[in-house]
Image 1 (cartoon, rainbow, N blue to C red):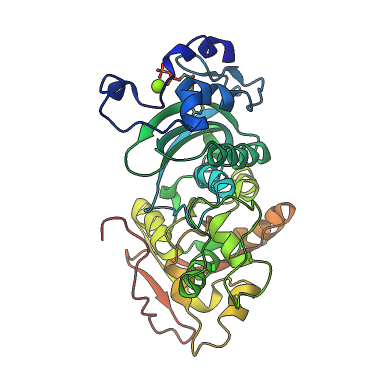
Image 2: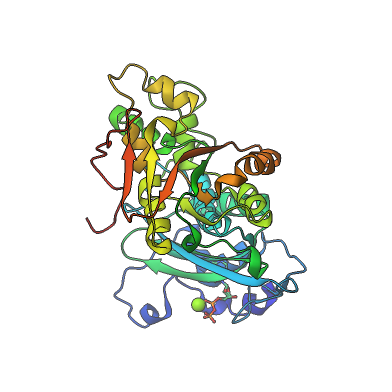
Length: 379
Ligand code: ADP
Ligand code: MG
């Protein structure tokens, strides 16, 4: 497939979208290795690193990709944008982990439906001055995350940006129709569960922000974890939950394929807000017990000196990329058993109610005043 567009490199003098190519006054990239490579050279470079799979009939290089769904399965599709200084900061996020995360957050959406992630499209709007090393490291992270999840990159779009790096990832997955889990299936009296631990990413961000620890913009010297903020215990666990989240594909699939859950969502904006989506779509409400929220050892040790546990980070902190699901009470033991294979713990944190309200309560049953409902782009 790569040969198809290698022939077109005569058009690749600058990494500019076609609308801009006729306007010689628009910002052009300097004569960096990236600008010399140009749009089609870069696409060719990316394509050269992509591995094939029997499900990818036609990959990068044609006008559209052709993929083969497994017999009897339906297609799941989701897309996410990541904007510099809205979703990430280049000063914080090394390109390798930015590449991993940009795909991980999309895979997480497929996991939340109990789907099997399969194919991805990657669109890049690249600002002037971004180095080829940055793109190479970004792609190494992206394709590493893809390989870990048997996802294949089948296309995308590449253009220049006048305002920061913009990444857009479209993920496709598949699953048998009866096994797909939606947000809309929760029933009153179901248990509310979550995978893993909550609040680590939010605490990692808070601690790092307070310590002012970030690597200088453009510094790609080290691809492993940057040193954590002073005082952070453990091997940067909290910060790596923020910078390098793991999508819960295996546990999502196990639960869906065992038919044990009634609704599911991934937690990107805090469990309170994301369970709120289940509640809204299912026409129910729910009560979350804050003392049952699963907190990591690192979270507990990092907050041990505080007068009160900052439960709001676990309720509304965001970027956990765990799964929140609901299930009939009679499935409790089966659920614990079913997820064992994944190595990820699951915890019951509340009960679905028939009243439409979503609340959080303290151990004494009093409403917990959370102060915030989670991250929202327009407030
Ligand atoms: P068109 O102009 O027909 O949209 P493009 O020249 O933009 O095609 O892209 C050529 C091929 O390269 C297509 O198969 C497209 O999906 C793929 N492609 C473009 N950018 C990327 C990218 N960033 N990552 C992966 N594939 C890409
Ligand atoms: Mg295009």
